[in-house]
Each structure stands twice: as structure tokens, then as C-alpha cells.
Image 1 (cartoon, each protein chain N blue to C red):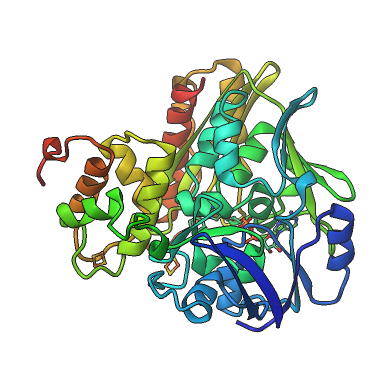
Image 2 (image 1 turned 180 degrees about the vertical axis):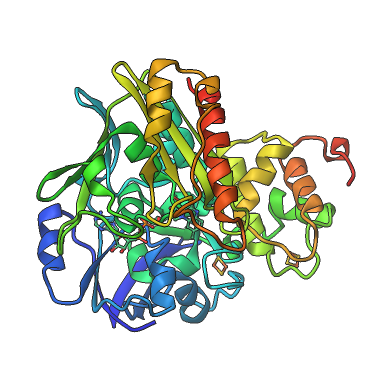
Length: 262
Length: 161
Ligand SMILES: Cc1cc2nc3c(=O)[nH]c(=O)nc-3n(C[C@H](O)[C@H](O)[C@H](O)COP(=O)(O)OP(=O)(O)OC[C@H]3O[C@@H](n4cnc5c(N)ncnc54)[C@H](O)[C@@H]3O)c2cc1C
Ligand code: FES
Ligand code: FES
């Protein structure tokens, strides 16, 4: 790993200032960035740790829904979101393993936007809002393809606000070696309609399965998606599963998620 | 180089580190605490698990500078004050929860973290919690037995596999 200067500011303002330096990069839980730096796929000259910023941590229920600070570890979300938004807590509690969950954060996961990551499905499936130091970004505008987001240079996620659905569930088909999702589906039923977000399946990263959303908004039951089919065009193919296998999983997991929704 | 200070196994320690110095390197090379093992160095195996402010973390996936001010516990800090093995360590010995022993420091630290959170875990909960700790020798069965026994439950009742 190339060497760098390490700084740990205690406010968002100081972090943003530190990040304006040439070659500076944010470090949150480090569960993605540290391995990436070891492989020299990233070589920042300054690392700005966000884990010492109290205003970026915690889970809090407000008028707009459940707000989670970007630097909140998965394990804390799993525990503290449980009574307000159980499906989201379950998603957080199923990421990686306990040690990953004690360090990895929601902000890091969303900034990274790994095509097999869990939070992107929870955020897109809930129609959540990604809050940055500059603006608020609707989930539908935030995810822009594999490892690509609406974040600009020097912009950091400070939190995420989730509207709370009537019912929701996240069902993940584990890729047991990496512990990521081979494919996973987040289903959320709101008063005005259903959202279905799929991760792990598409070469374009997380996406909404709009046909299923329409069918489920009419009738919220697993049988409603029975007649639908998912095209394998653009699906990920690797040694763990072919595009057709993943396309099939999308439907199977959507049905399971609808059945499990509470 | 910058100076970092943290508490390790109850003692305040300081050392000079580079930005890129991993917590695992600081513990092993800086402090000579080589009980923390580095198996993969890619965040997969859990051999390097230590407790950071009471929580299990992979010390190969954290910078020493980020642990400044924290309280770290390693396998060297697991024994009882009189030097005897802690309940978890003793259970690993009694139930043959190790063979080569390479994964054992991480297994013990993860198991202790589990028991602190959930004093009477089921077999399924133990297996789930230890997902991030890889052992190439034991087949896990005796490790799970050891953790059950350490929680005061009857390990003999666990189905033999
Ligand atoms: C063994 C293992 C298993 C895993 N399994 C899963 C899984 O099942 N599901 C899953 O979803 N993930 C999984 N992960 C990934 C894990 O959830 C990471 O924690 C997460 O993807 C990144 O979060 P982080 O806080 O560690 O970010 P970091 O690694 O610190 O940062 C990741 C990237 O985001 C940037 N960044 C960080 N925070 C911000 C911010 N607030 N604003 C802007 N940019 C920011 C960084 O500059 C970097 O580019 C796994 C990881 C490991 C090691
Ligand atoms: S050495 Fe840290 S996880 Fe393997
Ligand atoms: S005892 Fe050898 S790796 Fe676990």
C-alpha cells in the first residue's frame, strides 16, 4: 500500500475542508477502501476519516422518517432501526459478518455502490433520500450504474432518510464466499404503491423492477408476479451464476420478499 | 510518522506509525503482540479479529491511526488475571476446538464478542456469528461445541456430524 497522511476531523465542515486537498479521499469503515488500497487500486495521498464525526452517526426517527448518519456502522443500524424499520435492520444485520458490520457504514456502502451490495437495494426500494454536505438526492437519481453515483468531487454523504413503508422485506441469496448478495431483492409497500429494488443481478447495479411494482401495487401477493418474466439481458454472468440464473432469482426472491413482508 | 496512543489489554501504549500502518501491524510489529494472526490480509478470514472498544473488528482492515484513543483487546489480554485460561479459551482446549491453532485467536475473540452480546446462543446463532472466521482444520464442529460449552450449555447435546 502506498503511504498517505491520515487525518480525523471531528466536524463535517473540517472533513469537507480536508477533502478539498488534491489526492484526498474519505475513509469511513474502511471495509471496502482498505482492501482496495492494499491492492493499489486506490492510492490517496490524504485519508480523511469520517468516523470521529458525531453529527454523522446515529439512528433517529423524525417527521420525514428514519434518519441514519452516514458514518453509522451496520451493526448499530441492525440494532437501533429494528423497532422502527425491521426490514432495513434485517438488511443491515445480514451484511458480511459481525466484524464487517462493526466497522462498515451505510455512507461508505452507498458511496461505493457495489453492484452486489445490500444498502443500495434498501435505499432505492424505500425511495430514501441521500443527504450530502451540499444537497438532498432522491434515491432514483442517486444510483447511476455499477460503482457510479450522483456524488460530485469533494461531496460527502452525511446521512440518509428513509420513509417508513407499511410493510417491507429484504431477501438475500448469499454468495457464501464473499458474503455479498448473489442476488437480493428489497420490496416495500407504501400507501401509494409498491417499490421493488434488485441488487447483485444487473451489470448496471441496483435497479427497480417496474413490472413487478405495478403488479404488486394492484395486488400485494406473491402470486401477482407469477406471470411476469425477467429478461437475462444485461444480467451479471460469472462463475457463481449465469445471467439466466440471476434473472430467475430476481423473480423467486421477489416472491419470497412479498411473502415475508411485515 | 505520527504518534498514536491507545489502550491495549488494559495498558496505555504509544508508538510511531505511518498513515498506512494497519492495526494488525502495530499490534504485532510495534508491540510484539503476535497472538493476533494475519491469515489473509484481505478482510476475509477473521484470524486478525481483536476487540475495539468491546466490538469484534478485523485488525488487518483498520489503520492504527484510526484506533488512537480506543481500547483494544487482543488474545494476549483474554486470560484471567491470575494467568489461567478464560472460560472461552478453556472450552476450546476441552472440546478440541483447534488443531493447528492459526485461526484460534480470531475464533476466541469473535466467540467472546458473541457471548458478551448473547450469553446463551443457539448452535445456529454460533455458526452464523462465526461466518467471518475461517478455519481450514477443524470443520468448525468442535469450535461450535466449545462456544456452546463456554456459554454453560450442554455441548454433548449437539448432534455429532
Ligand atoms: C468480508 C466482507 C463481506 C462483505 N459483505 C457485504 C455484504 O454482504 N453486503 C454489502 O452490502 N456489503 C458487504 N461488504 C462491504 C461492506 O458493507 C462495506 O462496509 C461497505 O461497502 C463500505 O463501507 P465502509 O464504511 O467500510 O466504507 P469505506 O471502505 O471506508 O469507503 C468506501 C468508499 O466510499 C467512500 N466514502 C466512504 N464514506 C463516504 C461518505 N460518507 N461520503 C462519500 N464517500 C464516502 C470512500 O472514499 C471509498 O471510496 C463486505 C465487506 C467485506 C470485507
Ligand atoms: S487477516 Fe484480517 S481478515 Fe484475514
Ligand atoms: S485450527 Fe487450523 S485453521 Fe483453525
